[in-house]
Image (cartoon, rainbow, N blue to C red):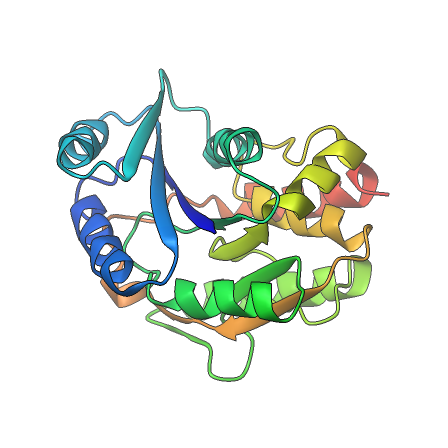
Length: 243
């Protein structure tokens, strides 16, 4: 079984090598055929150059480049399209952030849970037993918990609490079914794209579970690119988009 790690990246030169090195260490001990796809979303720094140099020395890494910055949603769409077209139904797509806040060694337990318990989606979650956020301001914590409540009310999925987490493992067969149903899984270019996918999954009766994620913002490389107001507006727009 192949596990493709898809990483959207925009101006991540400060930490992208650390992320790739962590994935390399994980790949060395994984039981799976681990491949990596980095989508550079029109970075204005050396992100693409650094990834390309690393890929030339590590054949399991591929780089796709957007000619200009299109937003996280477009980068995720590129990853999803690549995975759906290149991978088999039994394979797995894992998405994770490029800012050094996600531990790739969690992927092994995510994929095992996905495969062994016949699930469609496994999310590394801040909001399950053992998960937490470190180094995040009180206002951002309030926003994230408000978002969790919003989605559990309007788009409930049994076993899922963290709808906005970008650290996820999907079965390719499930992504193909979702694409056939919705035509597009992502219609936004913002940070609400991850919640949009989960909202659409909620209308399909998918089976989901979580593993605990300790999200340490103290290890984050670079400044956050999330626009809170725009993201919240995007969440509410899903009430009309996803029915």
